[in-house]
Length: 121
Image: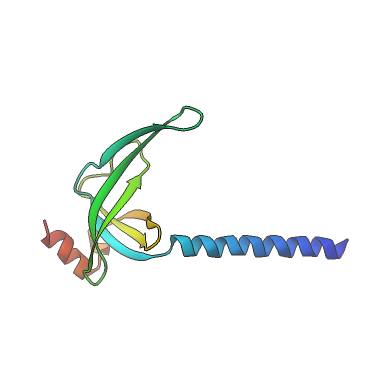
């Protein structure tokens, strides 16, 4: 009985660890910095149970820490558009596109990316 319990615990640990590794691989990618320059394209859909789902699609140009440019498409699942003029750090994955984003301060943006974002306006 002890061996079975230990085996189940080890199986659970390995399964959980494997899922964490797979999740980090899927969500990993290169960091780019973008400025929200438009309100996005609003989409209204319904979930299977009829609840409204509101999202905004964005196409924005981002810059990595070396100043390399990339046009990115991503969706923000929010009730309202993202804040105009806000800076985001987005993670872009070659297979999945943008996998995550978070708002950052202008001071957190690497110099070469900041030059392109602010100088490009």
